[in-house]
Image 1 (cartoon, rainbow, N blue to C red):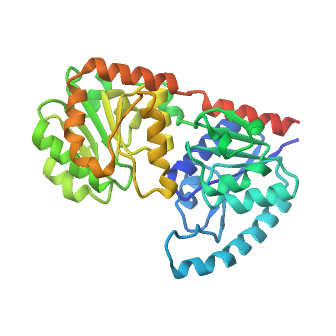
Image 2: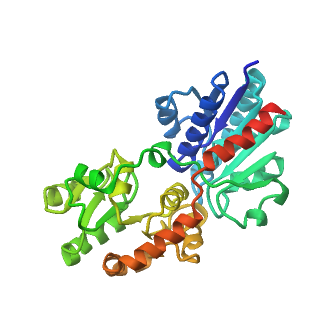
Image 3: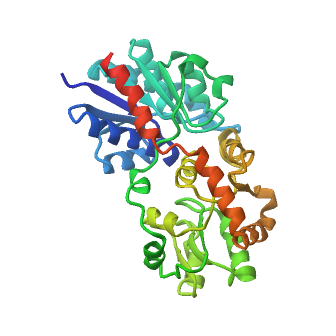
Amino acid sequence: MAKNVILSGGGTGGHIFPAIAIADALKEARPDTAISFVGASDRMEMQRVPAAGYPITGLWISGIQRKLTLKNLMFPFKLISSLWKSHRIIKKNKPAVVIGTGGFASGPLLYAASRAGIPIVIQEQNSFPGITNKILAKRAAVICVAFEGLERWFPKDRIVLTGNPIRSSLLNNQPAKTEACQSFGLDPERPVILVTGGSLGAASINKATKQWVETFGNSAQLIWQTGKVYADSYVPTYSGRDGIWINAFIDDMDKAYAAADLVVARAGASTLSELCALGKASVLIPSPWVAEDHQRKNADSLKINDAAAVVDENEIDTFPRVVNDLIGDADKRQRIAAKAKAMGKPNATQDILHEVLKLIDR
């Protein structure tokens, strides 16, 4: 008999893409499973999930603002509305398992499922858990985590160290460095730096990259994703310059990673999981504006293991020299890459799937 499974998580790509990766693995393993999603009605999951081929239902829900604002006055009404709708979704679909990948959108659904006696699985991407997952932890059958030490917040007997789901395209059929460099118009015999501040971009990373180009630009080549917000400020100036590929987006991240000798990025959990699984040396610049300072804590988990260099936002002026020192020291890059690889968990998606299937088949 076919089973129903509901996944929920959203607000950011860091919550959405792991959920989609789990759904894809479940669909491949059990093609007859009916898979659906629940998210926040005004967030990016409402576009990303259907694009991945899954139906999604939206809830009228948002997080609590961390500063005094009139929006917080609406939170109780949104929460009640979302809990009631989640109860109806659970009653209608009767899922075998509900999976939450974090973010405020997952809270009402997982709570409603647990109240109905349905096993819930929490997948926590960060080294410091979000408030939704901390609240729901005692109700979870299994908590899949990506970092050690989370027993400070979660019941120890329910924690399984799996790692974060990673896009299969990054792990399977990785192109050779020569082919990858050629696709960006770069010389495979020269070092390559990959810079990405995410799909929107990061002002500080773009500014620091410009400083590196103007100061040390002859020491390496550059694949530079500016993000759509900053593309007009940088792409016209640097497009076509020798040794630089620049655009708002990178469509082929598998090739970008394969070409890169050094990666510069924020410290989102999914990004760090990719860097470790692929064994990439990196310079991490944690965003100081992420809730509960998640990225700083994520970056520290690599830094203490010598698996990445970290530059704080308030020390961004040191960025060009830190990057150039690593470009000039291949042995150090290789040591960092090896330490990162040792922390990688490329089988995370399958390990999470294993826990889900145990609950479905019980």
